[in-house]
Length: 432
Image (cartoon, rainbow, N blue to C red; front, side, top):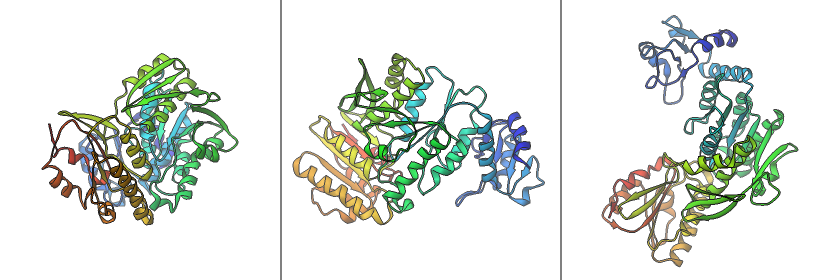
């Protein structure tokens, strides 16, 4: 079937599903295949759940009820999203970066919805499946679209931009992450820069952090909308404090956020800049940013008894973990506990990067005997030779140890890669 013909079906049934667990009556179900899943096995379930049509690339399903056979279901989904994008005349803002892209996306969404009908990527569904699904959720009522884009190998941002055709873009920052897939740091830089090139090709504009020298060095001769701390930027901000929550100024307006860490100042400022460009009143920007509360293990501050926990266990890489440690050091508290987990997807750089963090931690415990540090993961445990830092191979071993200790009036930082599941450690600590 041709995309133009199928698009008529999509207009009639505009909701797409790739998961029968959440399918609703009238949805079009795309039976996608991956290394660990095959949607073709759930065609009967999709029909029983009320799917209007089912797109499949399994020839054995060709003549089944409501099935539309295509050569590749995923490619067909991507082509449908690309065609749908051509029908949209709205601004689409693409957001990528090593750290902070999901937070910046959520903040930008909260700001823009003060005035516009906005739709954005749900969660961090930002890959070759998530981006098409996000685009296909935009309809004739959508006034601005926000598309988060993730990448773990070269040319991935270019591929996603070819589908989304964004006319605005933000790279939050570029740090060390997914080095296993990119080969080296230069490969990572070049991949993120693909967003700038796409915006240039689309004759669009880039929101850029004027304080970030790396981002400024890769920008081409294109239109920019700047934010930062110097007086030459379009949106000027001033960091007041971050102990632990970020407080900052735009003009004479003081904004008290619910986000911890100085590193979130630039995310808040990026969202402010977008809001200012799209003519959101500063009072509304302030209201949106102050009411935003992070969820899903991203820089959450949780109260347990007399203790405070900064839970940032959704993801970790050398850049984000180092910044989180620096920020934690600056929190005014007598008793502190650092719980860190291994950083994944670093390939040949894993030992070097984990060792760098351990050296940083060793300096901290040398200067502050009151801080306690617990590490979990094979890399951290193998490289740790500091008797003042306690390390374990697994999160389970850490839990077994730390569950026997009682804590009171203590600040915790819990951070590690998603696979470490460090949030489970909190469930087994004795807080008083």
